Length: 295
Image 1 (cartoon, helix red, strand yellow):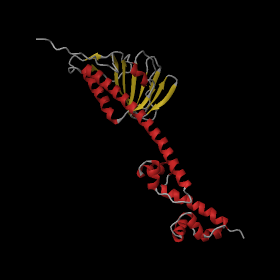
Image 2 (cartoon, rainbow, N blue to C red):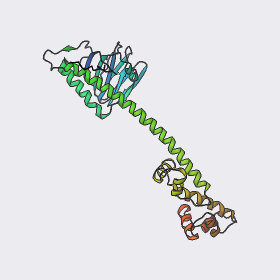
Image 3 (cartoon, rainbow, N blue to C red):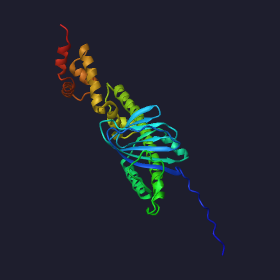
Image 4 (cartoon, rainbow, N blue to C red):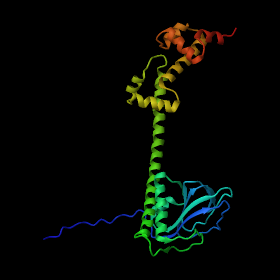
């Protein structure tokens, strides 16, 4: 019997955590202050409750609840309370040479709710795998528990790797969404400008949203939404507005009667023109003429 040949695929590791150095969950008092340090491995500080003051290199900032900061290797950093509020903080440090980690260098990220559960799992597995006494910032070594649950150490690593990969995905998707939003905004501006030009070109004519849709080859709903988003008024509202503005100019010039102006601007009837004029100007065409006349 001939053996079937299979190709063994080597799994690509985007982020590989080689070693875990420390795991902490601190409940800081309002006056807590660390002395500051730097080391040759990565550190994550996550503000679980409240906020803390962070020094990262030459930068100082407030880490708000639900945010975490990535501290790259050999970067001096410090943490302290704000002297007004207590805070709960999760800290984990680890060793990795994965190039994907460059994205996280010195970044502060608001953690999506869907990933907060993984932080809880890392803490839970860390307590299962290692002897974690009362939080001690001077802790320099993780001591494995002799009676730890099977695979607890590995799950700390796997959960951390999963957290980092999913966070990286989230950040990339957010970037794509922002780019799409920017592109869509530019597109909406372009479409709205085309609509505006068509309306102004047909000031002394009549053009409908359906006709604009046929001209620009986009659906009426899409055109109406884009125009409203850019100009904060509907297509018909803007069209009527510019016609009324032109009517005001023609009335001031006194070369045409109210009825003639109604016809020039293609209103259905003089009565409808007067009604719309009063709606936009808060006076009838005759009242407007009287108000602008100079004795």
